[in-house]
Image (tube, rainbow, N blue to C red; front, top):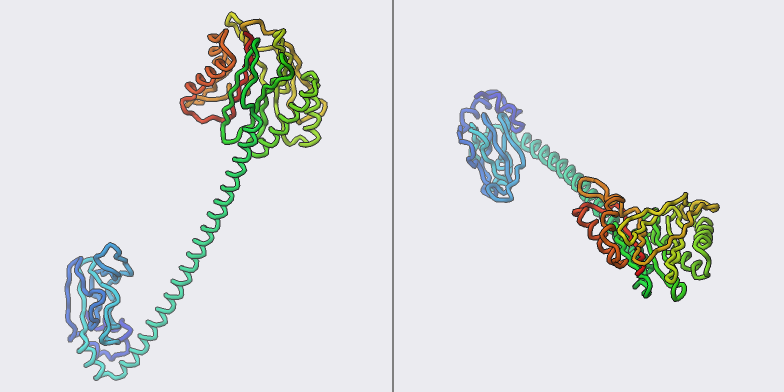
Length: 411
């Protein structure tokens, strides 16, 4: 140890060399092991410490769960000078040895004696206090600036979170409205008829789907049957779905044949929607007296016919374009005769596209496998069995699209 170590301390930097040597001889040498507390927060401050070797930690709330590390001090650095400059004060922090340390200790009496010998030391004291005050003010300003920035960031995040919450609530309200729209257009009950029966199921992939269906009486023995799939989801889909369904029901009530009904619906949709949305659909008329089902297909999946002997036929089809895209639409017109014991299944492509956990689609062949064991069953039993088989196949895998089934059975 030598006097040059003391000369590095701002408080003593102006002292003559001889005074530094005398001061060095008078200072106490303190050695402490790692973990030792050299001073404790709140105790009287009457000593000044200079680190010769090792490293120390400056702490708030030392030894408590709220302990906070403020700084680390190494060789040539010092602490506790405010105890000399402001006698009677208390330690503002605790100091603990991080490793084995060697420290020089100046007591208050030694400092007072030095001040008597070197009155000019008072100017150094003023300078040190001023520098400490400037440093404290700068640190405080920087700390406040940083805290203001953090508060602004927190406010911005809170504001963004609030906006997202408001948007989420708005979307949820819209989805609830859309779900009510969709529910309102589905029939509460399917018509009853001695000669034939109907069944249906719809399982949306989300809260709001793009599928719809309906079965409604046109006379005592004739029934309108419709199934549709809007190429979209959400509120716009629900509105378009309700519009398409209402147009089909209104045109069907006028008594036109299925092709005339869909052509007029398409003409109205193309004028209203300007080709921004479209819907695939099948609309047909079931004549319970004759067993004939006359229908027109607008880009939809062709029906499956289950014969009484268990054989299954996918009805031959021609080109059929969706509703809402082109004014001069091409439609697939057909007539099927259902003999007693036969059934017809209408479905949306969500049925065949549903996947298992490995990503394999359910497919048309699995639908046929379910149907081949169901000759003579009611339309609702067919729909229930298909949906149950689909659920078993999915094994909880996500559903990508809506699934809608409508079945007609002739007794």
